[in-house]
Length: 445
Image 1 (tube, rainbow, N blue to C red):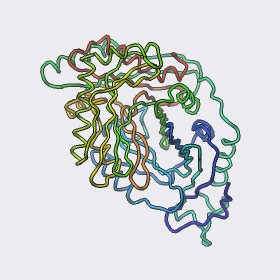
Image 2: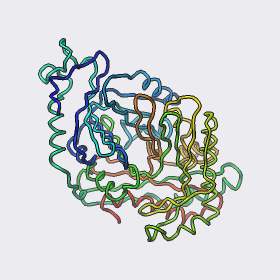
Image 3: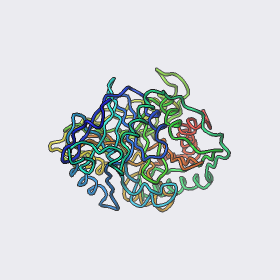
Image 4: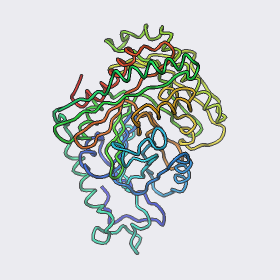
């Protein structure tokens, strides 16, 4: 690796890239148990950020615009430039209380260190601001800089790269609180009654569960289990300064932007998966379900309308296909679009979130109902992901997720309620979705 003492630092942000081996994100997370962390793992990209070189925060209704304005102020030099990673609350104010303390309405970090794996190549990138340069134009040494111990952190990375990583089982569960399921069924009935009156078309009702453990929940081990169990999903970790760790294994892309080309997922309509990797049982039943097809069509329409409002040329398949996950089948329609003018990926996300897949429709009515009837969602079902310094990036929807806070894991799962929804069936659907996180915690298969 590069000797940091020999690095020339420019006047603005300088990004120093060093070759690195390909390792799982969990190996790096395990090496930095107390630092602010962000991570994104998909089949084509692994990002792990350690520490905060620069952060963006947004508050209230202006949070999207504040993030975009702040992102456009960041520039820098380097062959490999890192991404900012973070996310937003479901709605402003949803993350004001525990276990979401410290997350805020919107937070993205330019990590001090970024591990970036694309394909079979990986690099470690150090972000250095002008305060990190000495009079000679080189990096401050550890003795010169009280702000950061770059050399000590680099040594921790080297140890993580050399040592490998073997996940350990989480501490034993001492309690599982599934919440008041009778009250949740009553809420579903109240929603269907409101739909029958014409007040709503769809509301996504979420419920929470709390897993208590005999010791501290370990983010690295949970992330490794999710990697092994749900590699077809995006695995995300966000741990802002002074906060717990949001961890998700989500199958749902909100938006990906590369230049003028955008891609979105409509993912709504669910059925338990029983068996069969190539032709999973239940696929035909799901495709034939009028209730699920109606729910799915609402989501497709909303995404198309949002993209059309941005002046995009949109391409939509004629019918949904089956997205088969470990425990559940979904109706899936991939939607692509071409923009006529450049946009930041956060601008697209602002137009899309929340889709009816996680909120409902009409959107304003649905989010008001959620705020009035549910425990605050925080960042559950919210946009999380990354963007680069050119405004390209990818945001997923933080479903199949939970927050690790000490000896507790707070989990969420939701179900889309439309005309014809049955409370018992919807409760079973949320139980099915909770299995992704429960299984990784060692609580259920």
